[in-house]
Image (spheres, one colour):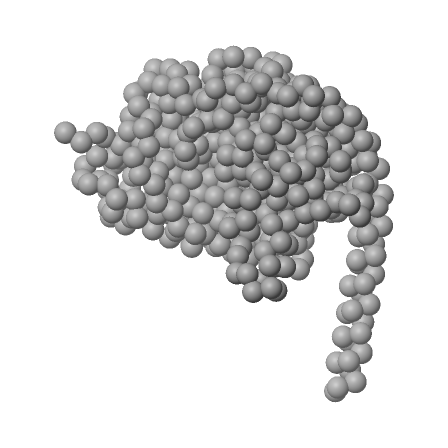
Length: 534
């Protein structure tokens, strides 16, 4: 008899994945569909709710074509997705415009306004989460002032996974992780009136959906959704926690040991520690996230970089563009295989790179929408491989910066993400934080974390800790000790990195002013030309 399956759905910003696992965590098959989003000159980043649901259906249908007797074998579905952002629907369940994504930068002025509130520190210590433009609370506060028609039309404010769960089950709900780091108290895992009032959203409290813990409760797949997907109506559907936590869970952020850290090195960087909800460290800057784990009394302390491997992508794209000018057709993806060689060619600690390449600036461990990347120490002798090494070392310095903001270093660093296949890159990151490194062999960690929630919810395991012992711990690789010579070099490099990072905001502000002046001049010239033509 064929093994029964749990399907984990992971709806990212650019890809929606559907992944099938056996009840004991073996990956059986995966299918994915490219998603897309739109950006604007005003800092907007939006995504179609309807298209995202269609992409989810397509991913599930694609998975069904890879698995024999798909309909009979699926015993549960679980859905996670990109965090933050604002996905509004009306009373009839229809989208109110496109979703504002976590990439959307329009609410930067509202972040400044709310950060100046006398109740901000109280709000921060309730949620454990600093304000930034990514968050639903900030975005809704911005909408209330600048786009009130959106909230007036809305009946419910979802996150991405909540929207997909609604389409699968007909239930309006969110989970404890996103509900509490945005609007609640991570200790009680409930909404907080103090937090909602601090965000100036009391009159919109009715938009916040009920909080459902997917590790304890599931809802049946509706007949309509079942027909679209090719499953039986009534299959249990789990609303998993936000993708950051699900990825961390699948990659080994919590396996019972203390003082363990977990970093996901993707386009963005996510740096996490599992701690007791009574041992949370509140940094002075008021940044980062506290996100509940589906484990009683445990939370993840989180700092996130807007750009992590995206910095390396940028540099490889520059190289690819130059090569194309000489008739060599290649992309940044085709150059990735050269990174290990370039890293080994370069001497350690010769350049300083601040990895703030995202157009949206930075959000961890500081929030500054004007933050931009830069090299320091360049000399005529430096070549491309030196730049590659500096960029990766910059990622290590930024990682340490994030962990320092969570209260200090960890004894072990667990890594996930495509970039960590590079042995030298792992050595750089391990030495940057002076910790042993272990790489999880778990593929599709986000979808696996979601599937683990369903496995506990339907009773395959009595607790999440029991599930972790079978799904996660056996897939952690051997520990790689940090190179202490490299550790000493990076200790000095980090001092310079931090000192300059604290000085750079003045330069970023000046550059922002210059850019704004240039934009105004261009607009004025365009107006003159238009008038002259008429």
